[in-house]
Length: 303
Image 1: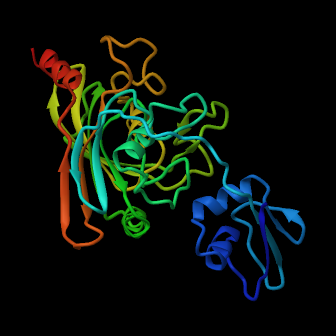
Image 2: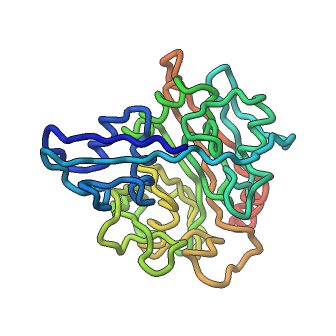
Image 3: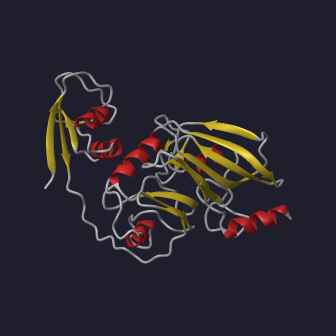
């Protein structure tokens, strides 16, 4: 049975999602935004958007559906563990592994693997679909991924992610030769208006997105770079590098139709992950070694 609540606004608030986040601290802002998109929120009996400006006297009604019960089973899938303690787990995700169950990927995901490894000791903040998952990387991106074993750690690290204090450095091979040895791409990213599986910098409602890059090696037609995320939007590095004319080698969505090398997805690897530990308060950094295919490709390009 759904949980229904009604709130009468006592003051003006610039956004509906912010108003509800203040009233219902147990729900994340992203969860509230999804409820609004799905039509589970009305203001004065009318459906509105997240950016609706709340006025004094507005009657806001929200209906929170019962969590969907899905049979997500633990699976004994080997994990490349970079670090583990009672609060967190850092894994080196392989290429081709989806982070959490979704249509078409009900098993074989990282969530199935960590449910088995952690014996159910995972934070529940993101519900049954994404237990313990604080951030995601694409199916065909490899590298370091953070998992939280309890809600306290999840809240602390989600806040670090929100204020951009987590270090996230990626290594990538891009098409072409970058003019400068370093640079910044500062371009908002939003859902592509026509191709809904793509993101784009050419949208009016994009969210702030900033990527810092620097050249590590040059190979004529290709460049090996390091990208540091300031924000963490969907496909951010892939979209940003493509937007400046240097798509990532192997990227089937944002790169050229034909790839000169046999690759399964983009040459993008989440190499460095740095956090302030939720219990000790110490800064910790984890380094995921490049996968074998990436190393071999670099050796080939060097020749």
